[in-house]
Image 1 (tube, one colour):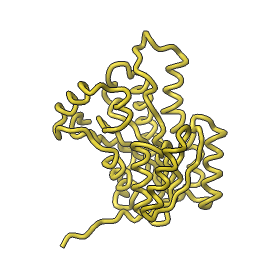
Image 2 (cartoon, rainbow, N blue to C red; image 1 turned 90 degrees about the vertical axis):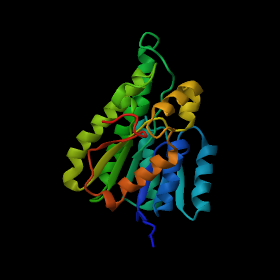
Image 3 (cartoon, rainbow, N blue to C red; image 1 turned 30 degrees about the horizontal axis):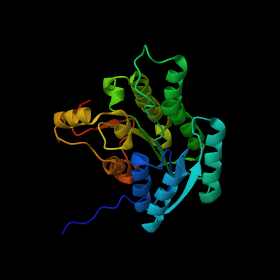
Image 4 (spheres, one colour; image 1 turned 45 degrees about the horizontal axis):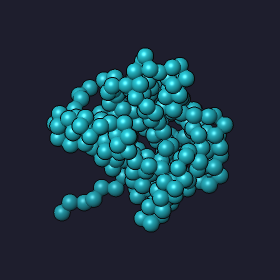
Length: 256
């Protein structure tokens, strides 16, 4: 008889930035199901955040929602303050999920302000939250950064800024893993390919999505839940010797 494996995150404190929709929502719900107390960060959509919170609570989990623009240090500090005010000084899991494409623009179409905005949204947020959380992490803690296949292959048309920011997150992951490894804190990144989310509903045509899915060995898009399952696995003690890894999760479309 097969036994269900539980990731055993019971009592762990987890922060998920951008945790109110799509991949972030799925990660928040999954970590809560595995026993973590989850801080669901959001910025602009309180309704989505409350929906995520309700989903967690209806499944018997524990969570709070915290509004914060994680591209700003003062608001990151507020996020940490609210976390430790509710759950104590120790933070066990950080998922840096905040990010976005913003718009598809060629290098000729983008100005400096646009480029800076995309870098700030994806890369600066990861740096700021990580820097603020690390003093509250102890041996056995875990960080996962949500990068992208775009960080490996440059992305689709008009996504140079986005791909650049995600490639930088991958390098940040490797460097940080070396820095905090002696403290037994692990740092990994996931590099999702074509995942069925509002990201692609907004920025990718159906024709392109069908073409990419057809080129993928598994012949389909991935789901947000599949990303969440990988995060929960990496956050558990079951993967305690994996750090500094940028893990492809793209159905075999790109091999690193």
